[in-house]
Length: 145
Ligand code: NI
Image (tube, rainbow, N blue to C red; front, side, top):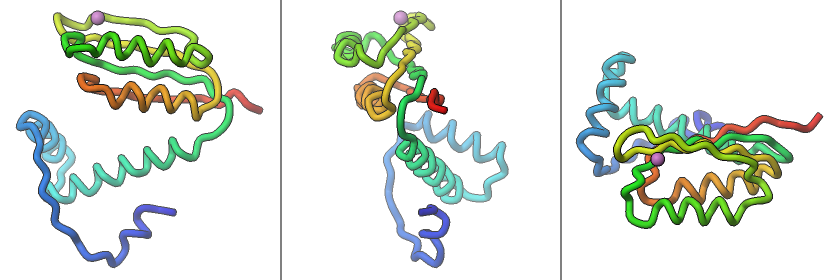
């Protein structure tokens, strides 16, 4: 099912969203550079991309190799332990990881995985849900013929 088709001739709903000031400033900068006429149109496009990405990752099945890259603030209380706990619970799909200290607070981690994509996604979603994780991206590649 395509998002655009479902949207056709739909009534517009108004929502109120609370955002940190710097997040909105960065978003507005991008909208200005890309020539959007309104913030609402930019937000609609951003939500469409988010839904497409989610649907795409939901449709992927079978055995994959993948990479999870994430950044986080290592001063966030309990976060380092939580990150380690999740990874130790999924030893059967986690093959390797690489850690980089970006600055005084920020860390970047790259985790390489192999196995059924449902478990790979479980690891990514578990990490993404942790407070203090700022960005997380999962990419996978099929290893089946
Ligand atoms: Ni670090």
